[in-house]
Each structure stands twice: as C-alpha cells, then as structure tokens.
Length: 256
Image (cartoon, rainbow, N blue to C red; front, side, top):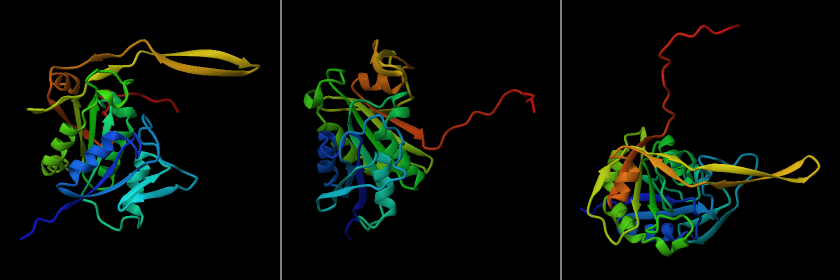
C-alpha cells in the first residue's frame, strides 16, 4: 500500500526569493506534496499583522508556487480560505528564516506568526529559523548553510507535526553548521535589543525618528533556545498560539 504524502504549505517572512525558503522547499519535496504562498518581498518583523481594507495581489511563478502582496499570516489565511490551491493542508512550515527567532524574537517574528496562524486555523505549524555562522544579521546569505536544517525538518516532519497538539506551534532554531547531531527541547531566552531612537527636526512640527541599537544582550536558562543553538544543537520549542493569561493573585477593588 502506497504511503499518502502530506500536503504542506510553505511560507516565510523573508519573501518568495528567500534562499532559506527555496532550500526548505527542495528538502520537503522529498517527503511531502509542497505548495508555496509567500510574501512578494521581505516582511521581517511584521508579527501577526494582516491586510485589512484592501485586496491582495497574487502572482503565480509556477505550479503550486505563488507570491502575494500581503503578510505571512495573510499567506496562511489565503491558502486555507480561498480556492487558490484547492487542497486541505496537513501542516504549514514557515522558513527557513535568515536569522534566529529565539525567545523575545517570537513576539515580532513574521516567520513564527505564520506557524501560529496555522494552529489558530486548526493545522500544525512549524517555524524554522537559522542563525548565521557569523552570529550576525547583516552578512546576507553568505553565513547561512540552510540545507542541514532543511533536511532535519523534512526527515522529522511527522515527528514535528506530532508535537503540535492543537495548542502549540513548533519553533526550530539552530546556528548555521555543516551538520547537526542532536536536537533538544528548549525554553525561551530573553533578548534585549538595546533599542534607542534619535529624533531629527524636519521642519515646523515635523520630525523623523531613526531606531538603532546599542547591541543585543541575551539572558536565559541553560536549556534556553539561545544556549542550545549556540552549543551546536537544534533547539525545539513548543509555543502556545493563543495568548497565555495570568490569573490575578490578589484582590483589587476597582473604582466606578
């Protein structure tokens, strides 16, 4: 009896021309039926933003290969809720992102937002992110060897899907390497970006702001995604798709 291939939607936030997406698609094609709907250009750090009040422009680049003018979350919604592909997806894989999405990064990440959106729509979501071997966001593709992490994702697709219990999406992080020998479950680190914003007068009552950084600082437990990835392993994190609320531990008398 032939094994029925899973139908997988691939998207990202680096855009349809992202090298990480292209390598991921090639690996996944060996184990799954792959469909692609990705942003038409870079949409990094858009989080779960969606397009409202205007339509999306969608361009076909090949069979099952499309780009759209929207955000990563738009790509998932469009793939699921329109007749564009005409299939029921078994999973969404988002990436491979050029740069890590560890700890605090998840709040801002379009890569993770696509995986989160999948879970919100009842389908397993997997986000895949790679840190440059130079540990630097500004090098371009030179410091990224996407294939080992792409192959790990494809070879363990069933296992990764099994971790998605309807409440969480899976986030993979690794530092670029020629191979990986181990993966470990990870907690989230805390990343402080050292943000600072300069303000410049551009005329009467008009100003411009420019955000820069004093440098990234990271804190986390020994099992944090940051420490596991920096040790040469693949960090596997399970992240709730819905907001996790804290119950008030004290009684507060509100004024009316």
